[in-house]
Length: 87
Image 1 (cartoon, rainbow, N blue to C red):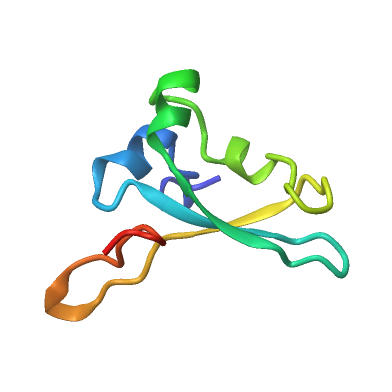
Image 2 (image 1 turned 45 degrees about the vertical axis):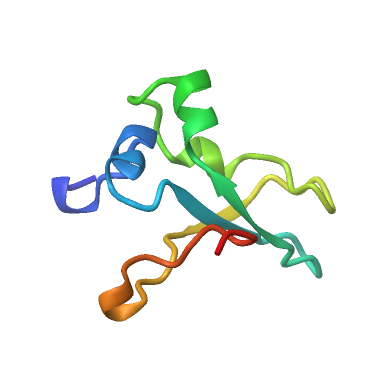
């Protein structure tokens, strides 16, 4: 893998605001999605753990272990999208 396409670590994802991601299940007929805070994973796994580990978390709806990770969207001059449920 070339350096331009390296998988970010949990620490890399936590260095920038916001410190959460959207995770979407790639399971057949599922596509469940949710927001997850990154700090608990940073504490549990350490900053050098690859973000691929998040991709293998079991879906809370179907149990499938193939997820897609997406950064929250930017809201123009208002900064990053807030964690769902926060205002």
